[in-house]
Image 1 (cartoon, rainbow, N blue to C red):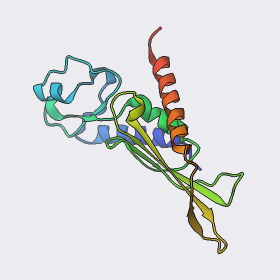
Image 2: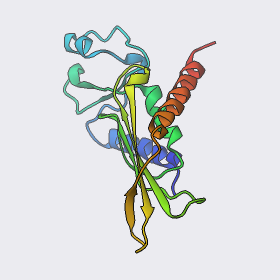
Image 3: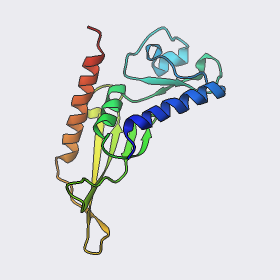
Length: 174
């Protein structure tokens, strides 16, 4: 099982190679973050804050900067929280993280899959949704859908929100 840090390292290396070998300008410093309206006006002097990540697309002048509309703390906290599960997909543009099926070592006859939706640029409780799917092994050795405890998704949301707040506090200069 490859860890999340390996995935992130691979993505960073791939982005560096792509930026060096193509017409991409590379990743923008988080201090240069702007809102969509400021980008339309061409005013890059204002900073929205740490809530938006940006990247530069193919070179078309200064207007080629596009927002990634997710809260950076919620994104990182979600990845940290789900690090024990294999990732199937992580879409920073759409704010969706989908895990692959995970079988806990202590219960080999069940498996879990989760989807995290980051819905906001702000660090807010309603900016995050988690969907949990569970399957149990049936008598034939196949998998069938099983009920998930009612509070499981909200408990995971709370864990992610707590971690996001910790990350935000840790990033504030002292």
